[in-house]
Amino acid sequence: MSKMLHKSFYLILLVFVAVFIASSLVVRAQYNYALYGDNPILGMQQWSVFLPVILLLLGSGVWLYALCLKLNKCSPKVVIPIVLLCSLVIQIIIIFVFPRVPTDDSQTVLSLAMNMLYDQDYSSFETGGYLHMFPFNYSIVLYLKTLLYLFPDNYLVIKLFNILFSTLTTFMIYLIYKQVNDRSTERDYGVLIFAATYLPALFLNNLIYNDVIATAFLTSCLYFIIRFVREKSWKTIILAAIFLAMGNYFRSIGVIVLIAAIIYILLNMRSIGVKKVVISIGVLAMLFNVPTWTQNAVLQSSGAMSEPVGENAAPVYMWLNMGINLERFGFWDNMESYQIYQRQANYNKAESAALFKQEIGSKLSEASASDLVQMYYKKIIWTWTEGTYQMDRYGIGNESSIGAGRGRGGGIAGSYIYTNAVTELLQGDSAYRTGLLWIVYVMNFLMYCFILIRLVGGIRRKRYDEVSLILVILGFIGFYILWEIKSRYIYPVYPLLVVLSYMGFKDTYDFIFHRKGTLEQYSLRKR
Image (cartoon, rainbow, N blue to C red; front, side, top):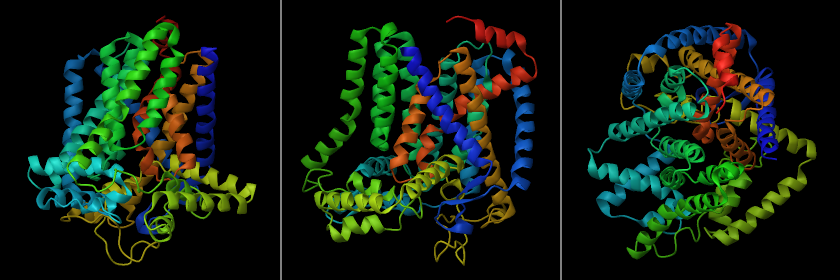
């Protein structure tokens, strides 16, 4: 029964990945603020660019992988610190070369942190305030307030902490790879180098928000969950629970990882034992909301809030309503849903929830089955194949303020503290910026191709070692079928895509170049 369930999860993800790949052969998902404004774009695939970039990246990948194999003779105690240090240096260079200033929500949470620190101003929790509507973002406000209190008041400090969290994620990617691919007899430094130079992760350190932090915690949680299933150690499950609670505190998607972790533990009940399974699930569940409960208790006891936290916050139905939109297929609906909550319901959670349910019902009843199928197809394809996690806007930024962005009257969100020769080269929709976005987009496509190879190989050999990663990815796919979308929202799964795609690339390389010894050891070695 357990093996059947493992295989089913592999097959479900395989179907989705195959759809991503097949669709990308015809359709190109884009997010380019200079050309289209804040809009999700699905256009025809441009094979005159697509194919040459595929060949370029494949050739580069093979060459770099061959170089990485030469590092096998070097000690991890030498290679790992050097790679992580080099990654740190690259990330620091990027935040100096692209000194993007906070905008949108990142500017709002930073301003609130400064108001609370310097003026003791908690008015944002009052009716109509940002934290009244979105109290879950108090976690990032509190985090920024703490950094501003402890360190010099500038963007650089916050971005440097982003870099530390991003580097932690890189290290965890390598550790997860070694856990799920323990049959490999090699050092596999290639996956570490790939993670350390993954372009979206390098650039999104410029985003002063919760994505980078939550990704580090949730990735660390998954690593310790895998270790718990293998080692049955109470220490590992407690660490997993702590990382999960912190990850969920910063970004309220931890429930996806929690559900995946519970399923993964239940799938291994026979080896873990019923008693340990029950206790481990209990530990994960009990610690899950402790940070939020503690925060809320402190806020109410201090008098910062006049009513319980979240009592009249925007309901989840607002984001579900945004997620149903035929024209923009679930992308930001230009304040339409906000106006229902703010104006029609006057910031009342219960009233707005009822209005949103009516709106959702109307949308579903008025749209034809064909319209809904097309919308959900576009929604899935754009979210998962855009590939850059919107680093064009959130990572690179742009100084332009005149005539840029067809979707909006003003300039691109994300100007610079200062400009330099590199920012000038990547101005607007320049060839350099377009080329960079193409590279990241095609890299994402190739990752899916190698993930497909890995999934097919796992099913054929009846080897399901990566099911923990697959459960989390499937959870994100299912969740963002219903929720409002941005390709940035799936950033927390990039570590898992890196691991699976590298495994597929390694399998392909070994097969093509007839590394039979490696393949035989890999497939025949018993755990």
